[in-house]
Each structure stands twice: as structure tokens, then as C-alpha cells.
Length: 525
Image (cartoon, rainbow, N blue to C red; front, side, top):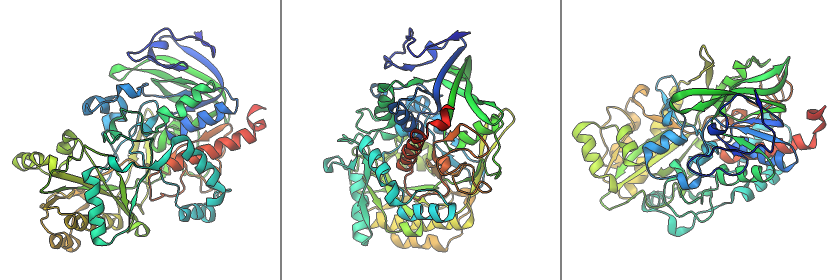
């Protein structure tokens, strides 16, 4: 058994030089035991934020990340390579249900912040009020949360996009919304003079997107935190109800596992997302007195359309989602334009053979746009023998109809912007050529099983609440009926929030880290 101290030097390096304090599989060739004040599982929006805040507060912090360390200079437009390097399951994870919902999670240092679009919105005040009134969460009003939102926004540089980086695809979305008289707003994004390379989903090659990789991770390292990549945490160590550390294995190429890694800590923080956090707790023998661990999974279902214009659009030029159409936000859905690389579009297009060839020949003239629905149904996460998590999620009839209505309105917008043909995410439904054809969708019966639905927003499987009989965690992320165990990811959300969740995750993590620092005696006795 090898014991590493905080000052142990790394001897092996990857092709890209690792920053001081970051280690990978080459540094962990033998069974290793580490000690620290706080161990954090996951390095995304929640984990990296908690790490930076607690390290700055003087605590000895270790972060364990299943994925590798991939620096900015490694990011490129090779979709196959980036899917393999940055995504869990190469981006092909799916829930079981009718229809299955394809979802994506980051698996790299920086987590899903490395592959998201950078949208940065505060939690809507109505949602915070709901969390206060219905879940009884302590000090969660917009006024009380404002200093934490502001701290996060300063750290990740939330700002509007420079106008010259807005591409033609997003300009057309805005033109259509303006023509319809609909409310459309500039997107707030965590970026610093984004160059508009539209490579957000495969790692920002300029570092302009202020993901955790280039903000909170360096800050955590500056204050002495250690980051161990390529470590798959298998269970939380415990003494009775107290979490005392974690144990995992080094993740090797080819899905193989290497040496054991054990970390002893005074506080354990799970920040591995709404699918893997409940699975980790269940594998470790923790049970919620409410029986809600793994339940209440919400997904923000998304559906996309592909609109063909007569002009060259060149959607790969410009920023990812420069605008959001908010006309129907109170009714439960948003609209935005995104660009999808040709290979991914071909794989997910509702066309085959010659029809697919025709669509791809027009790729340069397409606008790919989508809707995000605030779901009214809930799924759950179960674990298979061996502890692997599976998401079960059934789109209900109301949300399916909302998807159809949202797609209909989005098509009307795109026709108003000049589209001549629109391909739909509904199997067996022909491409549309006019707004009148779009409106007829509302009277058609569209089978849920033929809908193409995706998401990158997974929430709610370990929700916060004042009542331990209905929640998994208290108002600050402490797991009920457990000691020294906290959660810091979107599984804390009591409800879906209707907007991009990244800033909400970071803000809750900042707030809850401050609570730790203000109550240190709870974790040191």
C-alpha cells in the first residue's frame, strides 16, 4: 500500500502537461490511500465550485473525477474524438421509457460545464418562491440568494455575447421571433469575448467559455486542492451513519479498472449528477427515510427541427444559442437555435437513404432549432445488480402534447424567417412546407413512441426540503439520516426550473459551501 502526502510529486504526465495538483491514471499505478478534510466526487458545476470555495476557506480538499484531464488546447472539431474524451457513453446514454430520452453527461475534469452551451441564468424568482413555500428551504428567496448569484457571475464572467459573433442561424431565429411579435432575449452566457467557433459542445478551443475547467478548477488548485482524474468512485466509506471517505478504482482505457484509490475525509460531497449521485449513495448502503432517493427525476425534454433556407446559413459560424425565445416561458417552454455537426445531424435525422442524402446536401442552408419543455412528469433512477444506474422516465401525454405545440410554434417562427422546408422530430410525419401545414400538426395524432427527444438537464433525484419524510437532503444539501455526507449537484432541485440549470447548481454549491465554512465545528469534532 502506498500513502501519498499532499506534497507528493507526480512523475508521469499525459501528452499535455498536467497543472500542479492534478493527477491522472499514470500517477496511480499502485493502490493508494489519501487523507484530507473534504473529498468531493465529481468536478463539474457543483463539485468544482464547492472545491474552490472550501479550499479558499482553508480546508484540505481532494476532488475525484472519473474522466480525464483535457485542457483547452486539446479541444477540436473532431466529433468522434471529443465524444469519446469528454462524454459519458460517448453521448449515447438514454432513459428507458416511451419514448426513450437520449441524454448527455460530461465525463472529464470540469464535468458537463466543458460541453454545455454556456447559458447562465439565475433561478427564476417564481421557482425560488415555490421552493420556499412548498419545500420549506431555508433562506432561498431571490434577495437572500442574490449575493451568491453575484459571486458566481463574477467568477464565470456572465455576460451578453459580442454582437459580431452572432451567426446567421441565430439571427434568423430572432428575425422570425420579431416577425411574429414574440419576446426574444439575448442569452446571458459564461464567456469572455467568445470567438463564435460554435464548438461549445466539444470543448471550447479558445477558453473563452468560462467552464469550471478554466475557472473554479484553477482557483481550487491555487488554494491547495488536489484533483485526481481517471478515478471511478465505487462506494462511500462509512462508520454507521457517518461518511468517512470514499473508495474507487483507477479508470483505464478500454473500460478496464486499475489500482484501488481510498480517500479518508471528515466530509464527503457527492457531486456526480442526478443519475450517478443516487446510485453512489445506494451502492454505499445509504437510505433516505423518505424513500425518495433516486425518485423525482426531471429532464427538461427537448425536441429539434431542421429548417432549410434558400440562403447560405453556415450555422457552424457564430455562437451557440445567442438568443432565447421567451414568449411561452410561463406556459412551460423556451426556444433556441443550435448548430449540430453534420455527422451528428445525419445520425439523428428522421430521414434515410436518398432523403437523408438530400437533407445533408442542404446542410449549409439549415437552421437547427429546438424547444425546451418544463416537464410535468417525473422519473426515477434505479440500480442494476452491481450498482449501475438506469434512468426510468415516461413522457406523459400532457408533455407530449406540449412538445407538439412547441414544435408547431417553432415551425411558424422559422417559416416567418424565410424557411422553405422543415424536417420534424416525429417519425412518419413528412417535412413541412408552410405555416398552414405546421398548424395542422395540432390536430394530428402523433405517437409518443415516434418522437425524438433529447436532454442535457437532469434534476431532482435527491431533492432538498425541510421535511425529512418527503426530501432526501436538508436546505444545505446534508443527506438526512447520515452524518458528514452532502450533495452538490442538480439532484438537489426540488422541482425543474425551466431554464438552463448550470448557474443554479453553482449558486447552491456556493451557498452551501459558505454554510460549511460558517459551521466548521460540525465537521471537525
